[in-house]
Amino acid sequence: MMKDIQPVISVNNLVAKYGEKTILDGITVDILPGEVTVILGGSGCGKTTLLKNILRLYEPFSGSVKFWGEEILQMDENEFSTVLKKVGMLFQNGALLNSISIYDNVSIPLELHTKLPPDIIDKIIRVKVNLVGLTHALHLFPSELSGGMKKRAALARAMAMDPKILFCDEPSAGLDPLTSAALDDLIKELKKQLNMTIVIVTHELASIHRIADKLIFLDAGKMLFYGTLEAAMKANIPQIDTFFRVGRF
Amino acid sequence: MSCKFVNSVLSFEGELTARNLPKLMVEASSLIGKNKPSMIDLAGVQAIDSAGVAYLDQIQIQFASKGILLLKGSTPETQAVIDTFTSLKLPLPIPVAKIGFFESIGSSVIEAYESMYKAALLASEIYYWSFVGLFNHKGQRKGSLIQQAALLGSQALPIVALLSFIIGFILSLQSAVQLRNFGANVFIADLLAVTMVREMGPMMTAIIIAGRSGSAIASEIATMQVTEEIDALKMMALSPIRYIVVPKFHAISVVMPILVAFSIMVGMIGGGIIALGYLGLSLETFLKRSIEIITLKDLVVSMGKSVVFAWVIVIIGSYFGFQVKGGAEGVGKATTASVVASIFAVIVLDAMFSLLYL
Image (cartoon, rainbow over all chains, first blue to last red; front, side, top):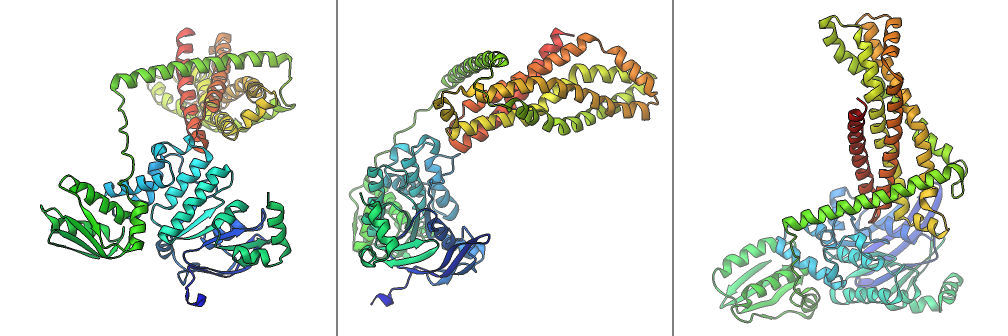
């Protein structure tokens, strides 16, 4: 039955290098639709590098990455931009454009990629900003927001185009437990209501327990495990056991 | 994607998404005309996104005054998207109060006054710590004066030399044509010496230093402010002014007169090429007349004002650096503002010096 489900993203034997140093060593994984897949591992194991290689923000050394069955590494800019319109990305530090307000940050993809009339765009922006609980900060600039608010604003921008896949790079890092839990709830809600496929890089155990359907565990550039959280706990892989045991509070 | 309007029921079929919406809105609008739909049938909608929901909200708001409009036939998936993205439950946006003309003038005046006050306060602190720093080097790193002198002075030497040479050359070339008409060739040396010593040397050097070193000072302090380095210094019980600004202040006070002297010398060489080559003056006459026309007062005023310009550049650069808010964006704004303000201040001060010591 599982074999009938077509993966949204297929990564095959992906190798990434910085100079001579191998950061990712032959990663092969299929990410299934409507699931929250968490990429985890210790600092410097290649989590963000994997995410950025999948999205072509870094050029992989070798391997293949397919979105909806189409190889993206060989695509030209126009073809790839069609794929990117169906993808949202929440960066680690938000990466909001500092010179414009939150409203304008969310409006950019809508204004530049759609032909929607301004009043419809206005409604979409207000709804998305309200979803992340920032209606009161709609016209503020990123510099006027706290770290958590910036992340939520960045999530509103990532959702602006109703992406089919949402990538999040450490969404809970630096946030208090309540804000972090609220962000996780929002991600869960998006998955449930919109059947969004979500890929999250994190090493926050509480977050993993709350939202993960599948885990990709990386260690020193290699994928040690892919599967559910329960399966990871029973897999008897020393690195995973240590990760969960030491990180427990 | 298509729509129908039959018996006051507006029915949509296909995908109600951002891609199809612009065409669909035109089609629906022409079908409805002046009538009012009483119901929207979504049974045929296969997919909907937030743009589609925003459009449904817009129709509902548009016809709400004419009676209740019902949505029917939506699948659970469609209804889930509508529930998530509907804007009908949003709080109404609070209208932003517009600032009146006189209010904006008033706030600008208050802002300018506050800026001047803060700048004066900073300048007094810089002068105080710079004076104290002459006798007591506590709170400054060893070698910072030399490092700053190299950064602000010697590294600026090539650009000062190049521009001064070109200015001297152009000044001389333009004057030479006129002087030749009157047979007053010999006065080129007087003209060049007076202009370079009294005006062009100090002012052009100050403008170059404002653009090069003033911006560097502003951006360095602004970056330190944004990355909390200033706060870190305070927490180490160090005065940021003593640690960062005083070495720059001392260094620029020393190197600026040297740079100006160098600028005058190179400017005279640039002008001398025209005087000797085009107007046929002898080297001896050119040098003799150049030296004779310059008085001690000219040199003292020139060097004096170069030091004042240097202080103003450091104070303005530091002021904008310390005032920065708003991350990387703020750093850029502070740097630009500091260069504009420094150049403006240098030119205004130069005009004042010219009036005072004519």
